[in-house]
Image 1 (cartoon, rainbow, N blue to C red):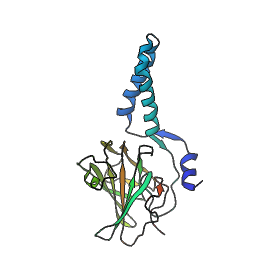
Image 2 (cartoon, rainbow, N blue to C red):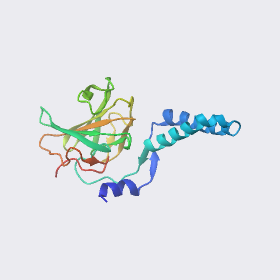
Image 3 (cartoon, rainbow, N blue to C red):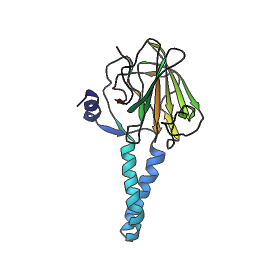
Image 4 (tube, one colour):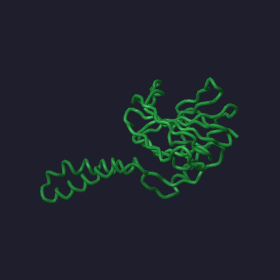
Length: 215
């Protein structure tokens, strides 16, 4: 078993911040219909799927504690490396696709100060679509020992809400929780010029644990 898997499984699990508008109404409806089933079994037609949906949401919104990995730049997201692209300004973009089975809490890639958190309106194309760069997104900039680091949370076809936990001026430590993409989809990290990626396309990543840069 890899160190990343051991780290993600050995620590307790909590629920992500920002999930209450989704989870609480569903859980309340599931509980209410379960009680009504005692009076009339026909309520089971609603209670069973609502109970299953509540269980699925508890799994989806899990937020395990983790011990930060080693490296200058850590993965901001759980998922699979979708693409690695050289950028015109010399940076390298590493795009990480997050499936519905992944933890959707995103983490700071390294220590520094948050210099900006900008919400950009856009569409809701599937994250694997080449035009998803124009989707609804939140663009982060961090002032770090490596210079300015840009990270982008991108909504997808199902994800319609990005919840930043921090604002400009906040200090972050490596692997610190910084936000959530509800039901979504992709996170891009831009490595500064001169820093090569340590991951490859198709490789799985664990937020706050997997090293992104090559030492």
